Length: 465
Image 1 (spheres, rainbow, N blue to C red):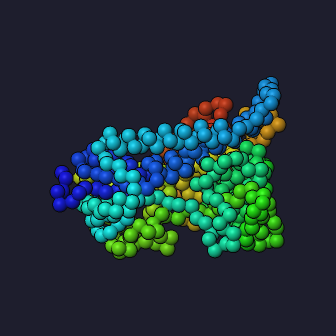
Image 2 (cartoon, rainbow, N blue to C red; image 1 turned 120 degrees about the vertical axis):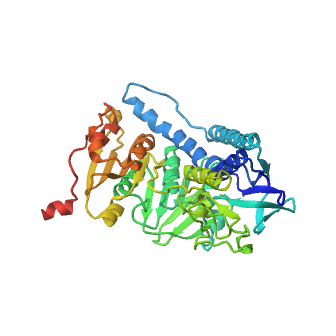
Image 3 (cartoon, rainbow, N blue to C red; image 1 turned 90 degrees about the horizontal axis):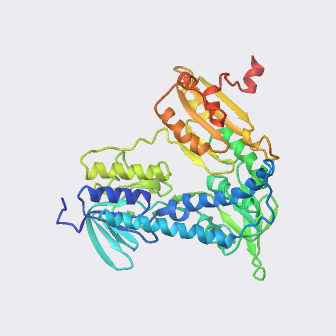
């Protein structure tokens, strides 16, 4: 199958989840494939994202677990947390997983090149450190994204991003986090759970913009219940550092001043396309620098494709993997196909966590007009014997015209696990009646999904009735 006119049939830039899946499958279909990775195989998810972050969520949750256990008759003395022990174990596991990615590429016959690659022309890439060029019939860009920093801010050099949080030399006493998205909220609760005095600064009024409004409110309240100080409606004005103590002072535009050991920017991520050489071949990008692709992940240049976060479609690891598989089928498998980005379930690992799939209430009303809402908020049975409270929210959004469930939103323990199964039902277009016909699993929080009978009416509509 190899085209001898080129060094490779496929050259992939980036060994994250999407690039690795595309490369492995393409090689197994008979293509000669190489992957260039400038850091470590595994990408954001494995190296500096989902995986180590969830280990941190687990670590921070044990403190709450010890408190809950008291209500069930357990007692524990001299409970303490050692950051260095946990950090080193977490990063050792990340190293192990990265090694698996490397072995999987090798086992599939893919050549892994540890170097930065930049596009020279439609069929050529330059390996920067080796200072050589290679050619490929097809080039796949799968470089993912990178955390943003506001470099226009005075004192921005005194801040870090989520990338550095996994490698802190010591646990800070006080941390300030800028942002209100899922990364900011997750890390705020992680550090609060580890005993760090934590402050979240967000320019909006309620965190998690873009999520269902009930979810946003629940997570916002959960942050405060976790001990996070939440300051809304303002942003950083400048940051200074005391060179003797290392302490940073964060000046906010509302006049507040915050003293912190670490200041974190968690204000979003942008496609990692700077310096990639896209301009050399005229690849079209949007205003964020994301590569514009068609349904088959092809750019406006016939020989160059892109998958994953660098395209800014749906920035989730499982989506990048599906896009990579679709690419391989299309280019090397003789089965052209795109990936359907509609109705994708996702989770936010706040404490309690979020599970969501389908349309929000606002989106559903805008798209369909008449909808029915079923909503339940309750304290799970797990907390009945404890002093802890962690309200559970379950919300179903139903299209009134045909009774199809078009959205499900949950906040509470085990929501990410539950939403995976619910995502199948919503993706399949099941109706509320079919949910109701399903027998409940009792006692469980998830049984509310099939036992809610009464439609919820907004207070303003009740008043009008």
